Length: 330
Image 1 (cartoon, one colour):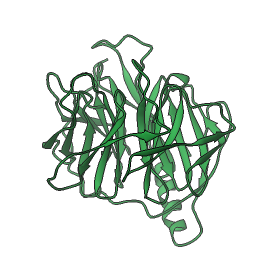
Image 2: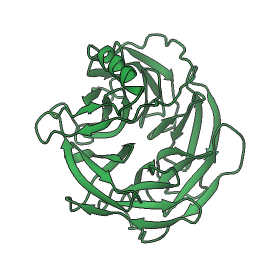
Image 3: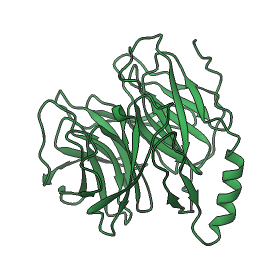
Image 4: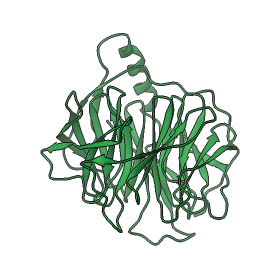
C-alpha cells in the first residue's frame, strides 16, 4: 500500500529534555523496559509526558520504497527519517503516527544518520562524502558540506557535541566536524590509538557524546567494538565490554546519562550498557527486542520511548517494499 503524504505543520525550535531518568531493563521477549525519572522537579514533568504518550501509536508507516535508516527527534513530538533511496526526509507526528514528505530528495542524494539541533537545524549524513544541513520546519537545504573529495567514502552517522556536528565515515579512519549553526571550515580528525581500519567492511558507524561531553563514543560495526574518541587528538581508546563479547552489527547509538543503547541491526536487538565514569568500560545490563523489529538501524528518544526505523536489509529493497517505524518503552 502506498501511504499518503499530507502537508506538514511547522514546529517550534527544539530544546533538550531536562530530566535524566533511571532504567530497569527487561530481558528477552517483546521487551518493554521501564523508566522512572530521577528525583527532583523533573518527576512531575516526566509523569505527565509519560501519561500523555501512553495512547500514542507504537508503530507507524513510512512510504513504500522509502529505504529508511536514520531517525532524529527533538523536544517536540516529531520524528525525522532519512531515505537511502533518494535522500528524502519524512516527518511523522508521534501523537498520531501520520506524516508526510518534508524534503523530496533527488537523484544521487542519500540520507542516513540524522540529528536535530536545538535551533531547528537538521544535520544529515549523506553517504557519498557529503553532509547536509536542513531547516527542520521547511525541509529546505541550508548548507551542503563536502567532507571528503575522495571516492569510496560512506558518511554514515552524526552526533552533536560542543560547537560541532561530528560525522562518521564507515570506509575511512576519520571523523569530520562541521560548525553548528554557522559558516566555517570542515575539520578532518584522523583516528589513531587503538583504532585499526579494516578493508572492505563498514567500520565506524553510530556515534554519541560521552556523559561528560568531552569525547565521542563510536561503534565499529565490524568486528563489533566500541571506542572512546578524543575530539582534540583523534586518539581512540577501545572500550572494554563486560558481559558481552562484542556488539557485532552495531549501528545506531543512543545514550541517556551513563546508559548506552547499541542497536545491532541484523540481530534485531538493542543491547543496553552501563558506562563507567570515564567511559572506558561498558557493562551489559540488558537487551531489548521486539517481534516488530525488522533490521532496526538507528534510534531516537521521546519521553519514555525509543523510536526506531526498520531498514529491512534482508528483504527486497524495491519501490513496493513497505517500511515502518516502531517504538519500545525504556
